[in-house]
Length: 129
Image (cartoon, rainbow, N blue to C red; front, side):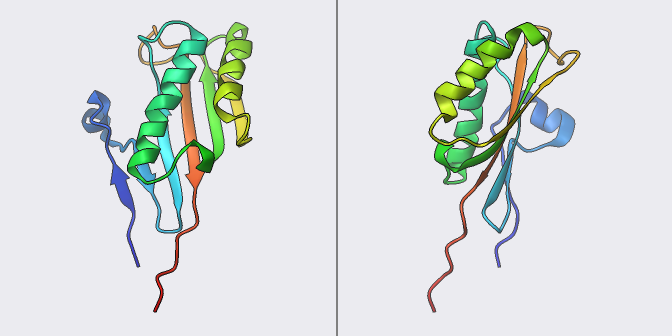
């Protein structure tokens, strides 16, 4: 039986805070930590870029956007809901994961207006005897 796999992106906070970009469980579930992109522009662009960070982590686990079953989007302003939602639709319209969007008071870096989390799943293939 395989064990939990921890995936690093090399981000500066991973060692400082003590977390992994993603964790791949033996059952095929992959949990991706919060991803941001403060230097990517406005809410739409930050959302697309932040999900891009998540997709890179999923790729390291052998999964893609089509395997996403849940997303969470944290925004600092309710005024950005439409732009973040438009970006989510662009990326996931065909996939239709369960999704949550929350308004929060802020992030570590004030230039960030959105943070995203992703959960993806692909059943583990049983080895033939």
